[in-house]
Image 1 (tube, helix red, strand yellow):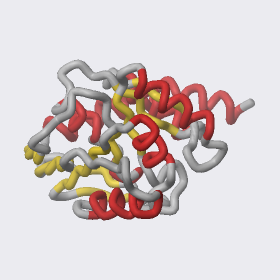
Image 2 (tube, rainbow, N blue to C red):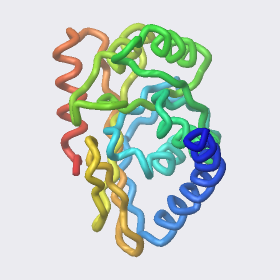
Image 3 (cartoon, one colour):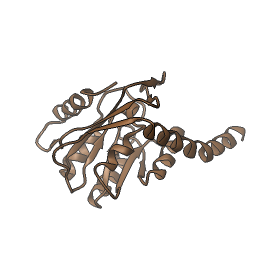
Length: 207
């Protein structure tokens, strides 16, 4: 009962505080955006490492003036907190894992792409292994012929948590370099080759 009460309180208080923290970090840093030459008008899949999730909504805003995206989030308690924070940034969420019982979440992701929503996904989430790409991003991209754009945020100074994903939190009053790749076409690639390509591009600016 006590654990349930604490979780309920956490779900009420942590998301708004977390949102304020993210906004504080963003507005107290200098920003440099390194964007692709071509930004597709059709729905795309935005991929970023789990440990690099914190500032990615701001990079997405550089692509869409009116955000229309669903982010794949785990069913775990921390995923519920992240989902509520995403709402403050006007982003929807799909709950589940593409690696464990992933059929349901993949179907929802495919449906969202068909409805005109971009998809945000952490290919190594929700529980790792760190910097290893799961099949889900490739399956969705190939079934819907959607391009993949990989995201990275490289802060000039940051804290790195002792979690499995080495979650990074940029420090204020530095510089944030946001990187987004050119759209990647996975349509004619085998699964292993597609995953290797996504990993290679994500590792170009990994912390």
